[in-house]
Amino acid sequence: MKKKYYAEIDETLYESTLQNGLKLFVIPKPGFQKTYVTLTTKYGSLHTDFVPYGEDKLHHTPEGIAHFLEHKMFEKEAGDMFNMFSEQGASVNAFTSYDRTSYLFTAVDHVEENIRLLLEMVQKPYFSAESVQKEIGIIAEEIKMYQEQPNYRLYYQTLQGMYHQHPVRQDIAGTLNSISEVTADTLYDCYYTFYRPENMVMFIVGHVDPEQITAFIEAHQFTAYTEQYQPVLKEIDEPASVKAHEVTSPSDVSRPKLMLGIKSDCHHMNHPLIQTEFEMMFIMELLFGEQSDFYHELLNDGLIDDSFGYSFVLEPTFSHMLIAGTTNEPDKLKERLLNRLKETELDEKAFRRLVKQTTGEYIASFNSLEYIANQFTRYYFNGAILFDIVNVLDQINLEDALHTFRHAINIDHVTDSRLLPNG
Image 1 (cartoon, rainbow, N blue to C red):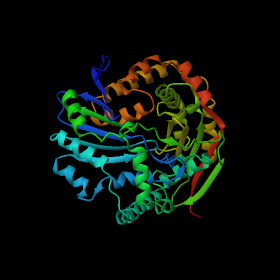
Image 2: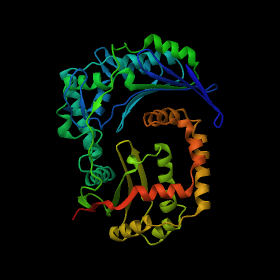
Image 3: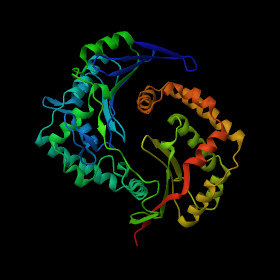
Image 4: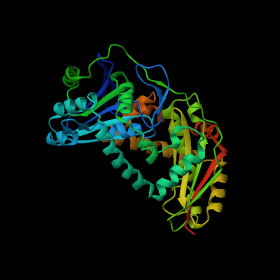
């Protein structure tokens, strides 16, 4: 078991690789009553094209199947796993993102028993044709519910305008057509390809003894496979250009909604992901943040309201910026936003204040077990350790951040996406 102490935040991280290849990280939190546990596989909505374990040809699986599989892992022949966790005083949940599926629980007591349940749930799949058909109906209703939300529709409309063929353009939950193609056999193919211990990470933070909890997990871990296996994925070939420069659709909205999607090449840069994310975030905050003069000019001119927002997304195979808001004058707002992206003179003092404020917020967030657990695995899968954030922030400067931003953003690669009032 490896042990590393992070003096800047007074945290100790214990790391182990179990006999079957499962990575285990433990952070003891003496004085905390609650314990937070996650078990995550490196399998998400993007992974629809792969070579199933034991085969040699590429298969295409339905969009949304990773999310579908997440739902089905809670259903066993003996009953619903939600009830079993509840009987042990634990609150259990799960989520699927672009690149991972995570199962998690929080508990005050019976932590070891809940860990045993979590391992049992994830390492023993049970799918039947009848239960799959039932789940298709449940997820179909979930998809319909989300599609009725204007902001949700605008978001995916923008992604589909930006990307030619990258699977990020597809809803994480899939479509009504794609989920109807899911079968029990396909779910088993996905499970045995990606739900392998060497492709998974377990993270525990709370009032636990690292050595004791590691020994317990060793005794209840996945059955070891005879060989280590790395899933073979289809290479994603996505052009730098956007698929469509303008996408518009009618909607039940009272005023127009505008979203600008700007494709980036940050994921191709030879730059640490965690540093790039912060550099892009800081520049966007200086350009568009509520503390900027530009934001208040847009507000005073009636071009935006409190719905205005922006984000930057960086993953190993794609990256983009999104800027959105409700406005009566989308053409004028678009022009102002694109002109603002060309700005090169930014305030050094404001930048340093922003870095200092962010550092303080991150240090404070380490008191949240939920934050640590959910963010740790994401950073780990992308080649970084969450606790290195403070050191990264210490090294960031305005000149380098502007260089990253200018290199990453090309305003010729913009999709103008709008929802307009019906009629």
